[in-house]
Amino acid sequence: MTTGRLEQFEGAATIEKVAALCRRRAFVFPSSDIYGGLGSSFDFGHYGVLLNDNVKDEWRRALIRERDDVVALDSAIILNPEVWVASGHVAGFSDPLVDCRTCKLRFRADKLEDSSCGRKPSVHPGEFSACDLTEPRQFNLMFETYVGPVREDASRAYLRPETAQGIFINFKNVTSSMRVKPPFGIAQIGKSFRNEITPGNFLFRMREFEQMEMEFFVPPADAEEWHRYWIQQRRDWHIELGLRESHLRVRAHGPEELSHYSSATSDIEYLYPIGWQELEGVANRGDYDLRQHSEASGTKLEWVGHDERYVPYVIEPAISVVRASLAFLCDAYHEEVVSERPRTVLRLHPRLAPVKVAVLPLIGRNAAMAETARPLYEELRQSMSAEYDADAAIGKRYRRQDEIGTPWALTIDDQTLSDGTVTIRDRDTLAQERISIESARDVLEAKLAEPWRPRGD
Ligand code: GAP
Image 1 (cartoon, rainbow, N blue to C red):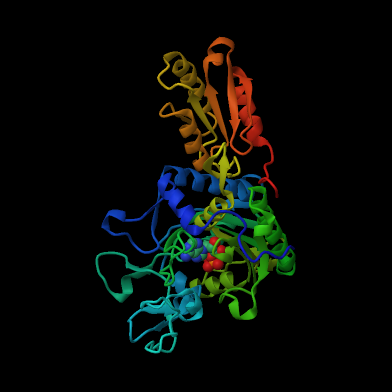
Image 2 (cartoon, protein in one colour):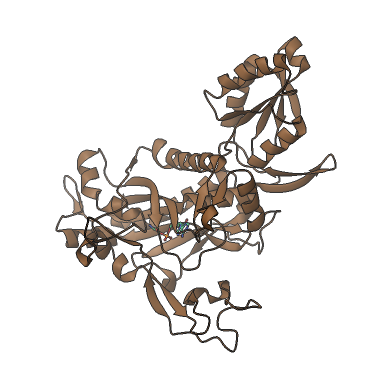
């Protein structure tokens, strides 16, 4: 397993620059913007939706579609509150917090070095002589709500802080209705909610985020081997989709870091511009969850085969869509000078790029060019995300596509009208070649199927 030797992110991206591009190009908007925003909440614009969809689709492809041993699930967000008692979240899903009696702000006790005191000049909490911090107290991260018309303790429920529990409580439903047998997995994508106390850093830590989680049920004796297998699989997925290997490392949790349910966890860490941070966790949850729910619900959650009966161990790769998208955006963000003009380009893996191809009549107002370009665009969009753009000078249109990471542009010009060829421009190399209009769809589909690596990796 590689360990990171880099201390610093290599590239032009900073969180601020990526956030600015995301806003400018309709990937991500601050949520409730016209009301002054809401901490750590973001709305996704057109290209952000397409990027996130591609990330989810790649996850489903690798974890469900191309495997025989993983099935899908989509469980409810609000579950019976007893689920969260049995899972240990009501008692244990908390962060240690300190309050400052002077500035009345609240901080995570274990992240003081990442926090700023409310006073200027900005220092860490506790570093001013006037700072007066309380002892740490545990603060539960689950959002509460009430089910039904009466707001009382008996109707209190929680917005799920992880999708995993919805999978555990469906273990019996799935094993009795699907042709599955350990080792097998149940995968789900869905929103999770956490009342995070140290938000910030753009999409990195949100209060509402989509998780992609898979619980893989295995015979207990095989759990360590499957843990190693899934760490490797998940690391390979990030690399296959274009993250630079030098920006990835695997780090095993020390005993003091382990979650209440975990017997071993390794984080796949990415070197974000803010430093090495958890991108994805791969945990060995042992039989903790199935045993807890068996005991609390009275329903035995175990594997019963012809001549065997046991409670499986669980290996869990878990990642949020936003942490993945943010890593892909940071890795892809480049600034360079082309023909003495600066350009910003997102070198996203073509399969992740929100738009695969832009169809551009060289002169937007030229009716013959537009009449040739439009049917080509309409054909291409049947099999891939395509965009038609006839506004502004061609250079400006290329820049726009570069900034949203479109890998190829097809330009219809005078020559097209005489010989039926178009130029295909490559986002990364800027090379332009001529291909026939008839072959354009095949050419692009073939390019999309090719492996792709970032330049210089
Ligand atoms: N079911 C296990 C679990 O939820 P976790 O390490 O708390 O484990 C799994 O979360 C993944 O979810 C993390 O690796 C990260 O990708 C993502 N994640 C966790 N908290 C997040 C937050 N506040 N904002 C965005 N993503 C988050």
